[in-house]
Image (tube, rainbow, N blue to C red):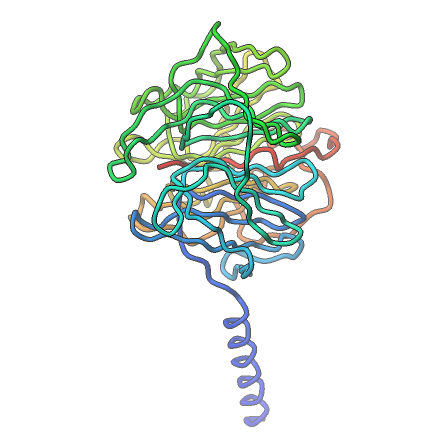
Length: 382
C-alpha cells in the first residue's frame, strides 16, 4: 500500500511538472488590448512600468473550461509584436482574419514608429500598413469601433507631444479608416462638436449609433458618467443625452462590454488621484430613452479588487477581465476574473456555453442571435 501511495505521489508530481512547463506565464501588465478571434482571447501589448515593455502575443483558449487559479495561457511564438504599444486600440476585421492595432504610445526598439499595424491571424504575421487619404494625427487613450461595412471610427484621443513627460493635447475630431481601401478620412463636422475627449468608453449599436461616455474632457477633467455623447454613423451627426438611474462615479482607465441586447457593462477604473471608484460594476441600459444606469446587487458579492488599466471582453455569457493594476495592494494584477451576465455574479470557474449571451438584467428574455461582440473591447489608458 505504501509503495502504491508513493507511485501515485510520483505520478502527481510528474503531471504537475509537465503542466508547469507547458503553461506559459505572461507578463503582468496594464494599458494593453484584448480581442477575441475564433474562441481565443488574445492579449496585445501593455506595460508593467515606463521602463518595462512587452512584445509577446499570448492567448487563452476559451473553447475549454478552466478556473482562474490555473490559467492555461499560450504564447504565439511567431506572433511577437514589431513594436511596443500601450494606450492604443485594437479592432478585429469583419471576417475575423485581421487585428488592426491603431495609435497609442508606440515604440519599436528605440524610436517612435508607424501608427497602424495589422496582424494576420491566419499566418501569425504583423505588417506595417501603408494607408492613404487624409492626414490623421497620432493619438493615445482611444477606443475604436467598426461598423458593418468595415469602417473603423476613431474619436478624439490624446496627442502626446513628449514621450518622456507624456505632455500633449486632447482632440475632438472624428476620423474613419476604411479597411477595404485602407484610407483615412477626417470627417468635417462643425455642428454639435463634443469637447476635447480621451480615455472614454465606446460602443456601437446595431443601428449605427456610437455611444461615448466616461474618461476625460481636456487633459484632466473627469466626465460625469450620465453625460452621454452619441454619434450617428449614418448621418455623421453628434447628439447628446443625460442618462438617468443610479449614480456612478466619474472614472478613467475603466473597461466596458456591449451585450447583444443593448446593455453596456462597465467595470473598474480610477480617479485622477489614483483613488478607487464606486460602484466597481454598473450597467447602462440603452433600450430605454433616456438611457438608464443600474447597479446589479449580485455584482458586489465576491467582486475583484479595485483595478484600472485592465480590459474586458464578452464571450457568450461571460465578461472576462484581464490584468490591470490593483489599487488595493499597489501591484499589477496577474489574475483573470469572470462575471456571469446571466446571473449577475462573479464566478471562479469558466465553462464555455453554446447559448448566446442574454441581457444582464433580464435573463428570462428569449436570447437573440449572437451578434459581433468583438466590436468592443474596453481598456484603460495611460
